[in-house]
Length: 162
Image 1 (cartoon, rainbow, N blue to C red):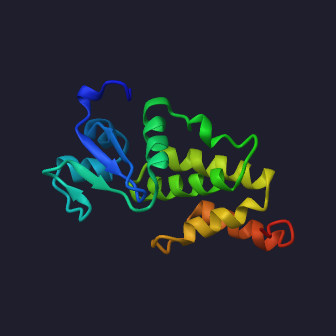
Image 2: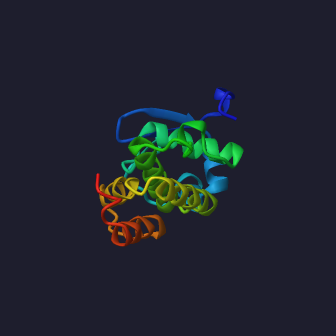
């Protein structure tokens, strides 16, 4: 997977300026949007074809690595564990949801949604962090995880106060 660096041909750069190298082919297999950008010349203002870099402003480098981890394993990395959830995990899950939405990665979105629900059910206060993260950085879309967080805050207002 990640260890075959001689096969990496693109760098994804998060809003934290962390660069993550990977394979366009692998990304294209999991995302029709990225397939179109890399192989069908779909216009993308944040993709530099000469430098083979794609800036992704909706998440940080750790979240990009988690998306790639999912491509190779079908799972989320251990740092996204919800057995002892905290605000950091909630925000990373929300960013991962935004990444999966932006690049139309259906399986990843479904996994993130299920994991996000478990996280919010275990610690309802984290609904605020998820909602905040998904309300930030553009895309005014109310998606399923954001809606679940909002519904939780409405149903249990005292338990969800940060």
